[in-house]
Length: 167
Image (cartoon, rainbow, N blue to C red; front, side, top):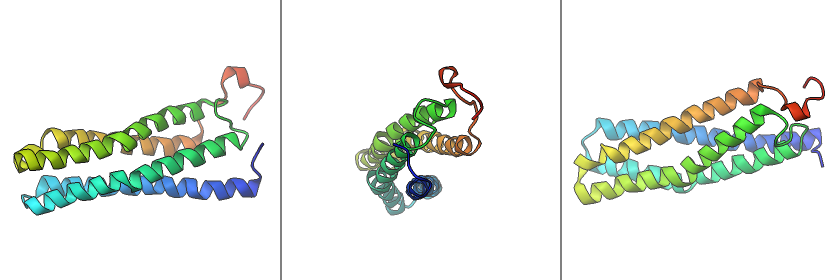
């Protein structure tokens, strides 16, 4: 069953909003992590990690699930399908990476940073836990930008078994 043009637009709106929320979360994480690295105020550092932990358990999870569900609906409900185009397959693979980073990684890494502060003080928080967190933030940011780019340009065309003309 294909979506009507109007229905597709109504599904596209929350898809774009959920994606924008993910980008906003990553911008927030960058600002909070820079704050952690540039301050010696223990309360501010702890607060930054608490905020990141709360966001990773709420907004990041909700936006990831929302963008994934609406993306699947858009793929299945339009001529694009789930496996006809290489760019969609690449988006699906990258989405699985984002799901792992967002649903497990961000929460775990911010929780680990908070636990390190409690156990070892401020000296331990800025090393391994922050490195894991920065890695997750950078990976997610690059992946999100790449997803936006391939969504707009739709490179690589059909898979050969679906190649029945131009797109």
